[in-house]
Image (cartoon, rainbow, N blue to C red; front, side, top):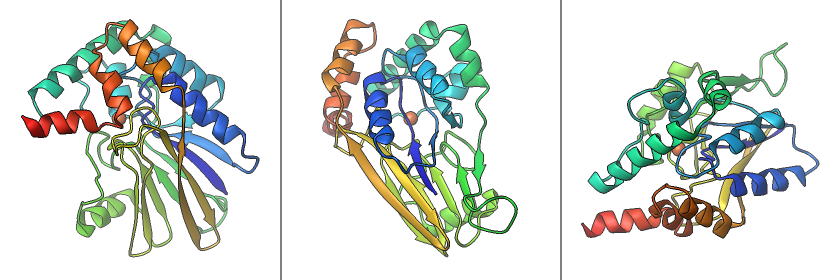
Length: 257
Ligand SMILES: [Fe+2]
């Protein structure tokens, strides 16, 4: 079974289109799932949701999806500094203003978690759990430097055992660790990567009999179309710069302060 896992699209329609074209050009993909955060930071929340819907791509609720969907007071995002907080609030307000009722309903209806059984539910076998942040909250950041204890605690809460996979996004930086036979896979971000590489990122997860393989894929897309779309909207132009630098512009300016 080969799953394409796409996360944190964040209304970046050109990035999503490029990733879906890349997945579509591969003839051996079993299914594509999204891991949430369909909206926020870019000007195509409705178009992104419509494309996901039209392709029949199932997925889970990211913090952005569930906060927009439930009219929560903020997006549940973490801020490095006051300026980032201000920008984050602007993005959230813009997104809430511009989502259609149908988009909002779709976002609020997304499940928190999806469980897969690559070898079928009729017998024991590896399981794949899909969440946005962690199995407990979609706002909690699961970064690569989390200690083994944290990962195993989350695995225990999810019910994961040796040979199982927990896949998630939310941090916008891909990583893969294996602890006590359990695979922890952060799929990175399609529409707003933060690892210094501007290209859209997703994961191909291959699950066989006793084997798990994780391939990080990066795809070029029409970045300037997205940047121009941001500039032409009332979203802060900073978000265009974030995309051009693979998320490193905000980090650098925060460090300088
Ligand atoms: Fe996100």
